[in-house]
Length: 255
Image 1 (tube, rainbow, N blue to C red):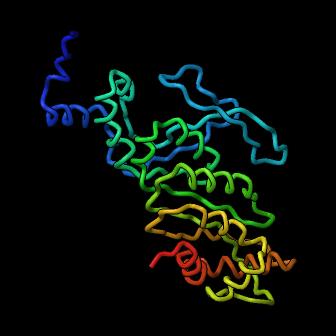
Image 2: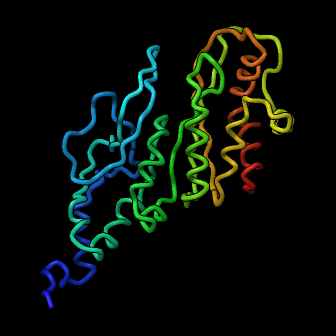
């Protein structure tokens, strides 16, 4: 029988102290996962990462191959030690996946490949993620397809207990005619008649098991509304912190 290494012969408490040095998050409890830019695929990696195609968010809409990467500064994870044996992998997984929030921001294309590359036990350790939801109407870059894919993947494979949701909104630079803000009751009506501006909420409700929801607005100035959809978007943006948050909590069956 092969003799255990000195590390494996050490008490578990001692190994955890060693791991704490090898997995230094620099005090960051939130890890940002983003898509690598066009032409920035790593030439060599210490692990195999899924690659995927996405459209460039520009006028040209060029399609390119990419992968995900950790963008948080000051983080030093010696992940190569996790491949030594199953015991070490199990002992170190929580230090990465169970004790951090994973912030994907607007790079929601990275959610599925990142989580798919983890073993099921490691994936189950992730309890909190942060997502950025783009505005549902022009001139904002609609992410309807990507949002649908993320929600349906999390429906089948996620174990998320807390969701931090940053919602993009628009505040017209001048006053506009029409509704100024929606209540939760108003939004229920729009949702029931299947207004396209709330389609993303239907996808979100597919994710089961969420126990805590944090909703944050990212409201920027936008041109005066020139269509019914833009009027609704302006009123919806003004509702993020009150009516929309209340409606989301109701749809997710949160107290």
